[in-house]
Image 1 (cartoon, helix red, strand yellow):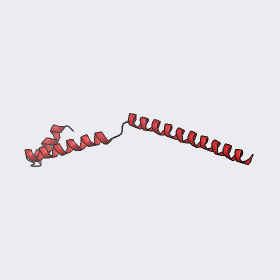
Image 2 (cartoon, rainbow, N blue to C red):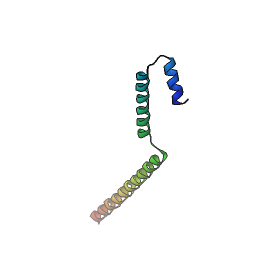
Image 3 (cartoon, rainbow, N blue to C red):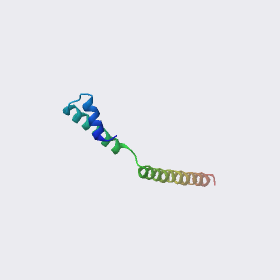
Image 4 (cartoon, rainbow, N blue to C red):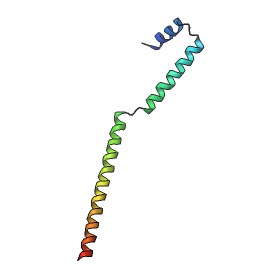
Length: 78
């Protein structure tokens, strides 16, 4: 359905022009807000890449920390 069809339906239901305008404004605002809050495929790809990079940094960081801890313990033992 097109906007004009909705307007005709509201007029048939005895809505006046002021009510129709208010309804149209509310719907337009809701649609705009939904567009702003909806993630795109590109948004999801970028998030996935950031999360992968973060995970790699954590894995490497804990690996380095483990090696240093083991080296420190070995140094204390010998």
